Structures are given as structure tokens and as C-alpha cells.
Length: 146
Image (tube, rainbow, N blue to C red; front, side, top):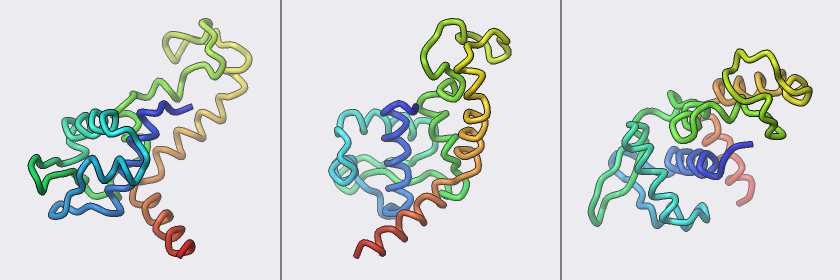
């Protein structure tokens, strides 16, 4: 459902929530290696998020990225919205043209209508969960694996 851009953005932002601080930023190379994301693609994503003030970035040998605001204030939906917009939550799951257009279009395919509740639940899930909550859960998993 989510594009690779959104997936990579979410993974990188959660990674930064766990590992970076405004004083200790993390470089693209390290993030790319840790998350197995192509560095040029990740660089474009992180620059986009920095331009939109979600991240702060510093150039130079000790440069890198960190969150631009507290992880508790960043919803998963906001990250997706910044990189891809919210259309992903409204598009037809099977790509039929009848469903294209404005959300208030009442002529939707049967699959679109059947998935409306799922869409609403997904939007709620992404809106009501913060990067901080996901980061905390990932830290718990890491400690269980050690």
C-alpha cells in the first residue's frame, strides 16, 4: 500500500528517533547501511524531510541528520503526508479508473466500497501512532533479541 519512499522515510525517521540527537546527528551512509536503503534514494528522502522542517541537517565531516521536533509530536501519517501525500489512503486498491478523482465521488468500485472501513482504520492507525511509540517498541524488540 505504501510506496517505497514512504516506507524508507518512516524507517529512517524511526531510526533517527532511536539513535540521533540534535548534538549527535547521523550521516546518510550510516543510516543507509543500517537500514539497507540505497544511499542516493535515502539522501533525496532525507533532504525532502529537512526542507519541510521534519529533520535538521548539518553538512560537513561531523554532519548528518536528526529529528527537527520531538518524536512524540510526529505522527506516522505526517511522515507519509510529507513524502507522498495522503492520496495513498484514498486510491483504489485494484487501480480502477472509476474510483479516481475527488474523495466525494460517490461512484466507486465494489472493492473500493468494501475497503472503506479498512482505509479509515489505517488512517486512524497512522494518525494516532507517533514515531516515538514505534521507536520505543523497536527498542524493546532489540533488547529481547540480545
